[in-house]
Length: 124
Image (cartoon, rainbow, N blue to C red):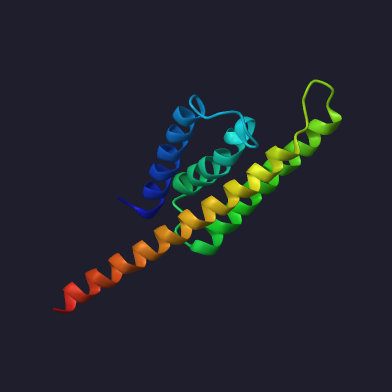
């Protein structure tokens, strides 16, 4: 699997787990914000996958601007009469940003490890 495909798979798997888990979780702080937590990884990895971006700094920038978009969207809900502003959604977006960066870093380290193994096997 390519790096971005692996990250996309992890993101959708996590989203599925949370959707299933929400049905059995008690109401709590982020009960209504699960979608914001996982919207950042899904949107970020979808863009990374479609554009086949492998540079880690560009991936983190994409993740940052995706998060910024969700936060700005939440603030626009404050002025629109038919929507509801919720500060927990902003916190959830930042949690999603953190999770996305962690997944990007883990996938980057795994890719570097695999590349070093392939180089070592090629030399031997």
